[in-house]
Length: 417
Ligand SMILES: Cc1ncc(COP(=O)(O)O)c(C=O)c1O
Image (cartoon, rainbow, N blue to C red):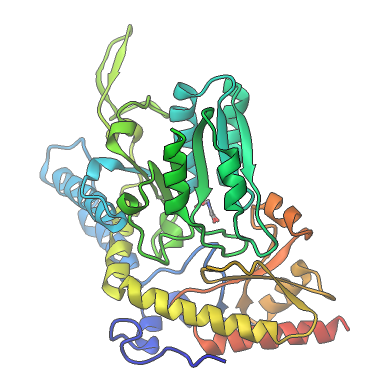
C-alpha cells in the first residue's frame, strides 16, 4: 500500500486541512457523518476564492459586458476579458481570440459539430470518435452525420480500456475530416495519447477535437503541444461554476466558421437584407454571456495555478493508487478499466450488489459516488455491464475517505450476502 503524499509541500506548501477548509462543502455532514465527496468527475466543489469572487462581482461590480460605455460596464468588460486571458494561458495559448466562452463542454462540441461540421462535411466524409466517448462527444456527430451524409467511425478499445491505436491507423483515410476523442475517459479513467492521435489525424488531413472535460482540471494541458484544432472543457468540473465552459479553437480555423447561435453582440452590421458578423471569439458569443460565471472561472484558474499542476497530479496519482489497491483487495469487486495511463477515476462492479443499490447505501453513509452508465452507454456495453459504481478523486480527498469508501462497499456486500 502506498504512503499518502501529505508532506507540507504536497500541495505547494498547503496542508490538507488548510486546503479542505477552503472548500465549504467539504465540511458538510450527511446523516450525521462527514460528507465523503468522491464524485469529482461529475462536478467538483468550489473554493471560497471562487465563491467570493462571484459574490464580490454580483454585489459590488455587477454590470453587463461589451455594451455600457459607463464606468461599471467598462470595468465588468475588463474583468470578463481578463478571465479570457487567464483561460488562454491556462491551456497554453497566448492568443485570447482562440478562447470562446460557452455554457459547457457539451455546448462547445455542438458548436463545432454544427458550425464547422455543417460547413465542411459532405456525403462520403468520415468522422472518427472512440468507443470511450461521453454521449456529449457522440450525439452531436451523429446529428451532423445525418444532416450532411458523413459517417461515423469508432476506434475500438482493448479489455483494459486502452484505445487500439493500430485500428485507429486503419480507420484513417482521405475521407477522414474530423477526429474527436476524449483526453480522459469519464467512465474508465483512461488517459488517451492525444498528441499521437492528433498527429496521425493531421497526416490524414483531418482536424482534431479533444474533449478535455476530464483532463483540464487534473493535468497540465497545452493545446499547442498537443496540436489539436479544438479543445473543450467545463467550468464546473474544475472548481468553477456551472453554466460556463470553453471552446479553444485555432484562430485560423475559427475564422472560417459561421456562427452557431445568432443574436446580439456578434454582428458588425445588421440590415433586414443582410447581417455581417464580427471575428471570433465574439462571433460565437451571441447574447448576454454568463458574466459572473466567466469571472468565477477566471478565479478557478487562479486557484489551480496557485496549487500547481505538478503537485495536483502527484497527489491525485497517489489517491488513485491507494484507492485502486484498497478496492482490488475486496473479494467480488471488479475494477472496469485498467488502462496503462489512468486519471483519478475508479469504475467498478460487485458480484452481489447492483451499482445503483451500492451508491444508495453508500449515500446513506455520507459517501457520494456515482452509479450508472456515466453518459457512456457504448463504453459500458463494450465491457458487458449496464452500469458501474464510480469513485473519482480530487486533490482535496484523503486516504481516510478512500478507507471509508472501501468500508462502505464491504458493508453493502454484507447486507446483500
Ligand atoms: C468526458 C466528458 N465530456 C463531456 C462532458 C459534458 O460536460 P458538461 O455536462 O459539463 O457539458 C462530460 C461530463 O461529465 C465528460 O465527462
